[in-house]
Image (cartoon, rainbow, N blue to C red; front, top):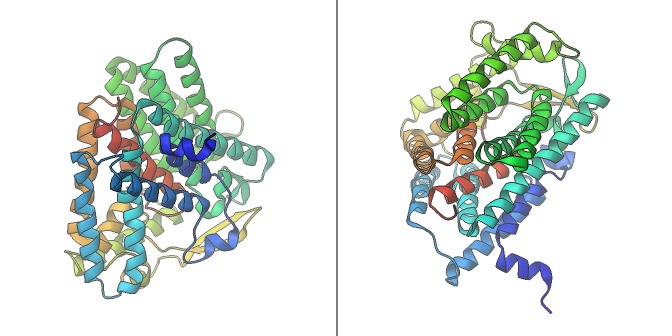
Length: 414
């Protein structure tokens, strides 16, 4: 009798992709998170996924569709930037990480998603991870054990802790988008269940106090609703606008913090708070690096080393984080917190052009194929990258999502 797990992996290698997503929920050791290079259980699972995919390709059990070539420019651009880097020792690990997230994992997911059941397996893992993170996040807020915000532990961060404050919001957003899209494209009890699940996930998403995530989720939901029905989209926008106004006015129990956070979105340009001001300074530093190295950038993972040479003097030395597990820590600001500016500063216009080509192609193909969920996921990632970049375990979830989008765009399942 065959051993069940190996046989399952051979028959359904998408199990490894689902496992990569689920393992991101395993809490990391504090010392491991603060080290320069750390490997998580999810990283190990992703390596096994990539290795298994390589075996399938070499043995002829699977093949890459022609549209997989869309990632080739990323490989070329990142390699050129690494070879041109003045410090290849620093750039090489960044090169490997970049390819892991945007090339290797997406291609592995593309290969393993052979049938619709594989897509449901990975999608189910994304929703399950979102449910776990959301439940932990809500518990943290209601028990006062979340991350510190305004001197109180009222911020939901899930199992990722204060050291990765946007991790929970990222995973929960993906789950909510999948459930929202499922609700829009189904009927009967599945629709009710999907909408109920999406509504429940909205709670921890709000409690994350992540302004950028709220904006990305709103954009993704709006795009999906417009694709589904313009009339429905208009009605939902009116209702959500009214809810936002109520929150801003501070009506309702416990809404003061949420309302203030929501109101700060519109004031981030005219009256930015400290975190937003630091982000603008980091963006300025990234722009300066690109001006001096326009074609191939300063080299992968070299932004941190050159930051102080380009950043304004008013930039903070780091951001304060605190939670019951990790305690108080001051995290250094080692990236521009903008994926586009990170690529532009470290890989130049060559790297940014390759990056834009990938996402442009994925969006175009998903819209042509009327992929409601896929378009929503891509919209979220594209908007999110305007104020965030790669880092931490949730990045592997984003990489898996890109693989699902690539698989759908290539017509691997329908």
